[in-house]
Image (cartoon, rainbow, N blue to C red):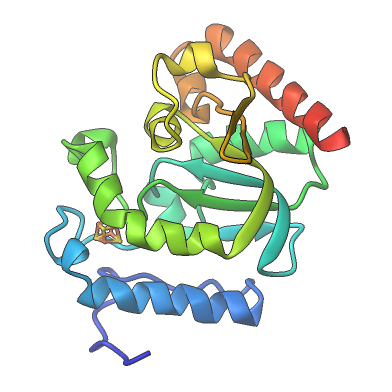
Length: 212
Ligand code: SF4
């Protein structure tokens, strides 16, 4: 691929050194595409840094147990260049370690550039649509047993509408894919007593699906 002129890391992103070499090359390719895509040039997040993906218990592209898709990278994610490592990520990994510690997993987001909060993205669906050409490239590199959208916007991307609290933990089969929507772990900061049982039940279902 032709190299776009290099922009500051604050605008593009970094390739995490812990990823397998083939995945590092792929991540760099996506960072480069941001510089040239028309969809990115018109995106309100054009000047924000980009975080692509992380892998757990996984040696590279191909089959994985689960594919987690959250919303987009927050502050801590662009410090570590990894999705789901901020405060909400801490909650997420505590549950993941409790229920599916050895499952192979892809971690990524509905759209790939950073915001400090959701208020910076007035039209989530529009940004997600602009980003789809990149996120589909990520999804196409893996064959998950189970797709896990985290939160309502990510669930909508899978065609799951309605309140995420009702969809959480309920298995959906679509076009040969198994989808298990969960509430976003950041919900635990608002109404922990309400959302923690939902998430625990969802992870319990995920554990059972992977054991089947
Ligand atoms: S969020 Fe997606 S579409 Fe928008 S600038 Fe970033 S990579 Fe491009």
